Length: 267
Length: 340
Ligand SMILES: Nc1ncnc2c1ncn2[C@@H]1O[C@H](COP(=O)(O)OP(=O)(O)OP(=O)(O)O)[C@@H](O)[C@H]1O
Ligand SMILES: [Mg+2]
Image (tube, rainbow over all chains, first blue to last red; front, side, top):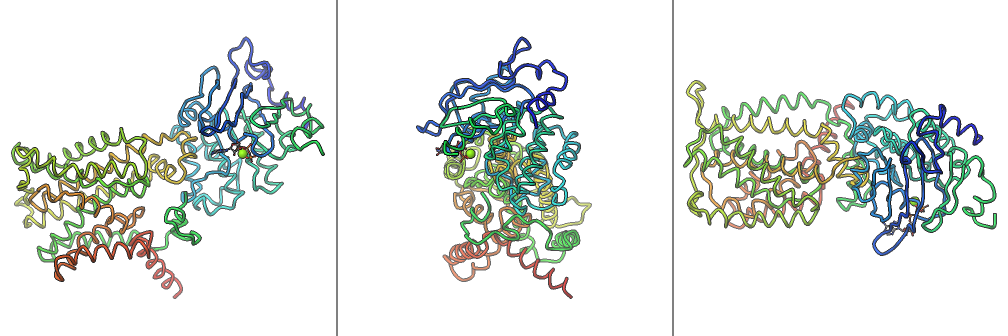
């Protein structure tokens, strides 16, 4: 899919926020949707993120690539408040760094953590309902229908404990549960892990639909560079706590620069 | 954390342990109805001592219903529920005795006070988990008897106070103990229904989510500390209500009835009964009431010894408690009936 088509699809009417060049950091319309500056974070004395700079426009879908241990998971955790950090993370101008995860979630940020984290003894339906914890009761039925339309596979398992689903089904449940929260910013940590190639594509189709139709901004960590570059409007490569490379996915392509930064020079 | 990890068992989690809540017993409603009828018939069929014992089962059942909210639902340990029981027990002793308030006031009053105390203790303990909460609650349980003795002017000190129970109205034609049994039964039924209701609600789901995976719950916007505190207060409220019922049934309260041992026995009974099963509180209460009584005849130290052995046996053989065993038995019976 070409970059041009992605962009025009992402911002169909060039709306006030969507029309701004995201990398320019907003514009006269106000603060950018998400601005991360000088973000440093780690675990105890171990520093993992060394000054992340990132601006994401509303309605963008950004992929984060990078070798194991680069700090991709840590970046998402810092954004959702699961690890503490220094620097600044502003969501529509509001500082969210230092807020507790549940407060960040209340501002419309939903994080699908690495390794799913479904609630095993609870049924699939209960898992989805917990996703809608912050939603009004009257909206839940409608949300449920929408999410099940995205993941029809879950429909047959609604009354089954989540722990009895296959790994891939649990992964879909985790994403579906996050969608129940109607996030404005969706953070996904390797959602394709353990999925069959066909299922992975379908999952990314869903993510794209959520991104395009519902205008949800998506930041997705993905090991499959090709896939990430195909679906995302922009890809970032992370290396030892820094964002090494940023560019428009379509233009960047699975070309040489990404390949050498991410896959290693030998390729 | 899954249940297999929590109970330290390496065996793959299957069936109930994997959280499989498909019904193994095909007639839950019928069974409940039969139980309800039997429970109502008890005071007319059994002798007064048995009626007293079964009333105590219901009283402890209410307390364990509350304790299970903390142990089973919130996945935490409270060693201080005896303190809430004491609070609830002294409310009718003081309110309807020296203060001269009518009996019906005692129940909501102790519910309210225990809820408030639970909230007050839960708020600073907001971030306390696992063993820390256990230690804080243990401290409260330790402090209660001396405090009761210290304020002897109100509480009667170590001599205790006698409590008058609501007596049977003349229109009912019941003896007082029969009336009291039915009263306690009604309270227990309401308490049971309220817990089922709570667990099916949004708050109940949030609690289960917190227990299974706090991080995942948090990023979905569940306020962990608030839920834990609130459930602790709810739990305290149940213990308070049970305390009032206890005082009515026993007719006497003293500091020695609410020592640390009571708190520990309550926790043991919750675990033995089955902390996250609806039948757990009842089974735990039966254990608490009948095991020591049955061993009483054999000598002084025997009840403690037998109780201890039963606890060890149940915990080792059935980590899901007596309720887990019952469930397995029910599953076997249902399968056999299904095959025929
Ligand atoms: N809970 C933790 N405590 C201490 N150090 C951690 C913790 N989690 C991650 N780290 C360290 O932080 C660094 C970055 O980890 P992170 O999980 O962010 O990498 P990642 O880019 O997501 O890797 P992967 O692609 O393997 O998922 C690693 O060196 C790791 O050892
Ligand atoms: Mg990772």
